[in-house]
Amino acid sequence: MKRKFVSDTHKERFTTMIIEDDMSPCDVERASLFYIISGNEDLYRKRRYIYDTYEHCIRTCLDNTEVDFSSGMKSLIRLGFNLYNGWSDRYTTPMSLLGSLDNRNLQLAGNAIMTRFNSNFREGLLQ
Image 1 (cartoon, helix red, strand yellow):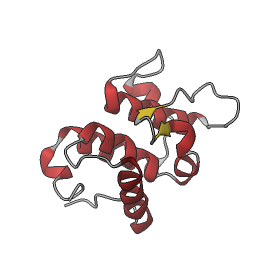
Image 2: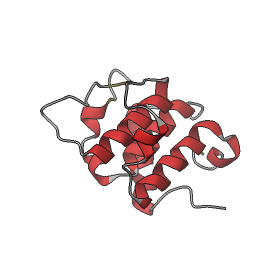
Image 3: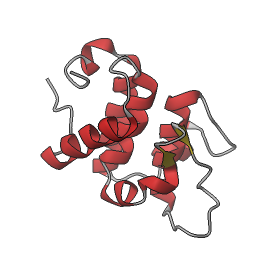
C-alpha cells in the first residue's frame, strides 16, 4: 500500500492541525484540506491565512496581499477548498489545479483526493 503521508513531519503537522481545530475523526472534508496544508511546508507556515481554527472555516486568502502564494500553492489551496466544501472559481479545474504541481505536490493532491473519497485509504489516517 502507498504511504499515506509524504513524511513523518507531514503526519505530525496533520495531527497538530486536527488538535488545533478539535476536528471530529469523521470529518473527511476537513481532513482532506488539513492533509494538503500539513503536507506542504509553505502552506503549513501560512496556515493561519488559509484556515481559521477559531471559526472552523476557510479564509479567502487567494487574493490576500499580506501573504504570497505561488501558482502551485494556489492550486493546492483551491483543491483543498474544493474537497472541503465544494468551493470553486474559474481556476478550479483538474488541468488548472494539477498542471502546475511538481511530483511531490501531485502525490499530495492525489492522496488528499483519496482521503476525501476512499474510506479504505483514510482508514488509518484518522485513527
